[in-house]
Length: 86
Image 1 (spheres, rainbow, N blue to C red):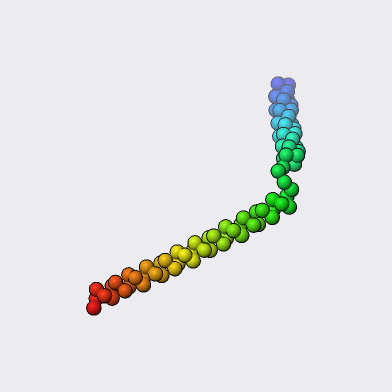
Image 2: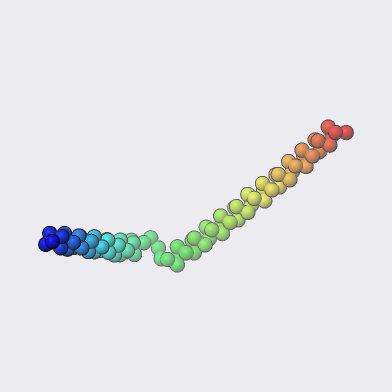
């Protein structure tokens, strides 16, 4: 029975050591991230907003271009079909 208590205490100690290591590692990583960040969060958010707007515009232009191309091809196919039917 004494061996079981000792084993549980050792496991608890290992678990506490693991969580302490994770906590200290996380805090160190956060501190390094804040110290070595290339720019402020405000500038980064502004950049992300600008790039997402550009991506939205490019996607919309591509969609409109594909829709126009599909419409053009559809008319071309229908025109060719009509000439074959006549």
